[in-house]
Length: 334
Ligand code: PEP
Ligand code: MN
Image (cartoon, rainbow, N blue to C red; front, side):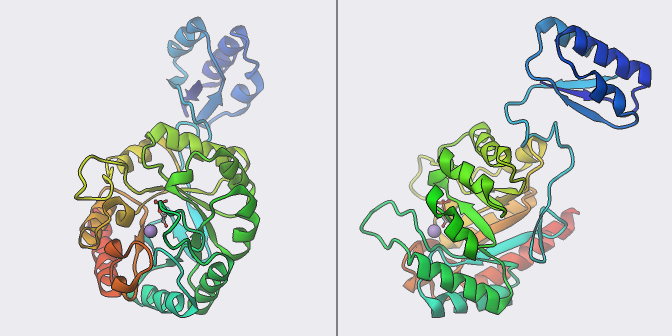
């Protein structure tokens, strides 16, 4: 339980809260009394029904909040988190667009993609080297040479790079090349991986599991935060629906909802959400309209030749349109 103390609570009102907590067996006296003039968020653990009732009646208490994810919760951390990657700020005034191919396919391909992404106005480059493919017969990614090629393309274009890490034992290796570690949808509840990513000094982009509730997703973020890594970026990428017309069902309602529930920045991936290049631009724009901090988009310089997720890859021209429209929508709303 989190006890939110009113900012303008008088010393006497603060003391009354501290006394009530102490009487209920919660030794938070010093913390409550020492913070004159500030809005306090007291993390009390479990409270008895009686203590809860007594606290609710005190004038210094703004509200009591029950939250299973204390570190991710906005109730404990009202200020929104912004994450800086190079010169890029995720969660700031400008929507951040991370674009690039589903997979790194070679040095030339990723460099061409990086240049196209930059020219279209993207701020970061994506590309998978270790790919979580449904079929073991599908292209599995280039592995380490792919990571190296991605990092090189990032360096040459000045774009920070995001790439997926699939297993705890690979976090250190991927960390050497990536600016942001991506934990994919299939691994959202791979708890050893979350813990390992939490021990890294890099921002972690945590995709929503394709059948995960928002609470499960925030609890997954909590695993990373608990290890001391405060830089978690959430990414909605659609959940499994019933209609095969789209690959997944993009849950845009989670975007404004997450803004209430968590201080962490939220991106949307309209590519895996829809699985169709013709829907990526409109749904990307809709995500910004819903308040997303940015987009993760699959763009390939030659979509038809893509070795993975070709159907959902947009062209550099479409990416430029998406970015222009996203910026226009953000400007119109701010
Ligand atoms: C990806 O972004 O490369 C990816 C595999 O996405 P997801 O984990 O959302 O399926
Ligand atoms: Mn993909």
